[in-house]
Image 1 (tube, rainbow, N blue to C red):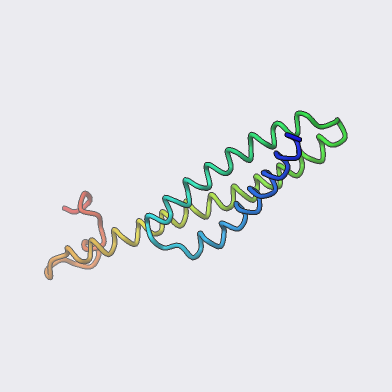
Image 2 (cartoon, rainbow, N blue to C red):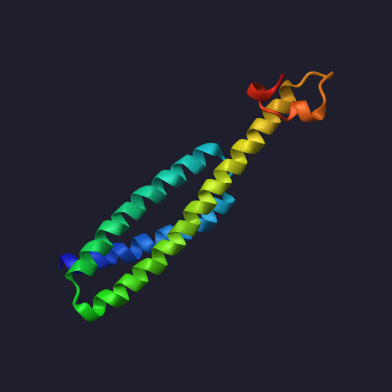
Length: 121
């Protein structure tokens, strides 16, 4: 019975995680990224633990197939994670550029205006 519960949780978790890719594209608020990143880490941790237990308890012939499936799944999750990190970095960069432009005085050049405060002369 535990095995079936783990398999069901793996299936649900995998579907949830892979559907997060669309949420990452749509989310633009900084808090949304943080929440999505936390959810991604939490679900992937549960998924890893359940997969480890299911693969450990499987027969030799099923271990290879399950390991291959897990590898493909975690490869996709790695892509989603990279998308999340790229999107967060892009959002932060846009934020700092907007802030720098807003703080720039009329006499500054545009190159100076786009630099963070710590890098200005």
